Length: 327
Image 1 (tube, rainbow, N blue to C red):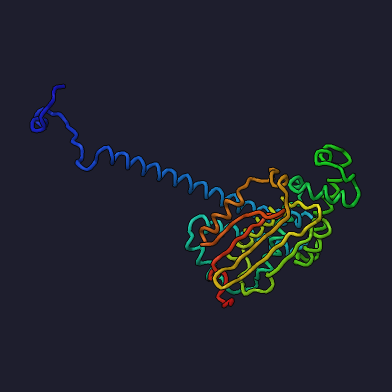
Image 2: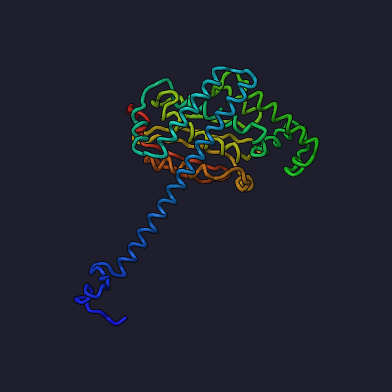
């Protein structure tokens, strides 16, 4: 078509698009960049939501296993009710974490009084972690503990390897026997107190050293947001400490809580080895979730190694945990 002057276009019925004077190639590129950034943010938000869902579901499973065991064995009605209330609280917490960071911080800062303490949430976290790992479905995740115990009690040769442990019929029978005995004895503890749990783990697993949990100003409601956030975080860290534990000399797992002027800090140190850390024992979403939660709360989370210890260190602003002057 021949060129048509703009002044004659209307008469000829021709529509001519005149570019906006401020909308050139550069603006088109900017729009593309904006769309790309928006898409990437949507992908990141979707991934964050999936990580939160996975972690809450993971902790939901621990409470469910405890409930299922106690119902099947008509054991400890009080513990079963606790599991049900914990699961209900986790569902509520999921809604808060996944949608509103400000509300999450407000819930924590307003939950300053109640019957729960850091010691009680540590007891609950230890109980959930062991409950989850002592099932038959999780026995391969803590194979090193079964193997170590069998060697220590001279039920197998000290040179027995993991491959031999898995492939020998007698070893498999012993493995099943130990798994049943450990799960039963742990679930039937008269009370999941710190003293009982520490004594039980020292016999079958490893020593645990605990410092700072019974001498601090942090209190909160049972089944409230603060208890559940701390329970999820501590349980995840303790689960990994148990799964990746490795020590020929039976060194302890060390759990410390420190409150200072502006922050409260939790440190977990567990003996490990390079070979144990390279074993595939999980989805690795736990650390992603911990980063998400501490980012939302304005906290700090880090991991490091020194000598044969793997160290997880997290801290939270003290105003989210207590109104009491620490120093």
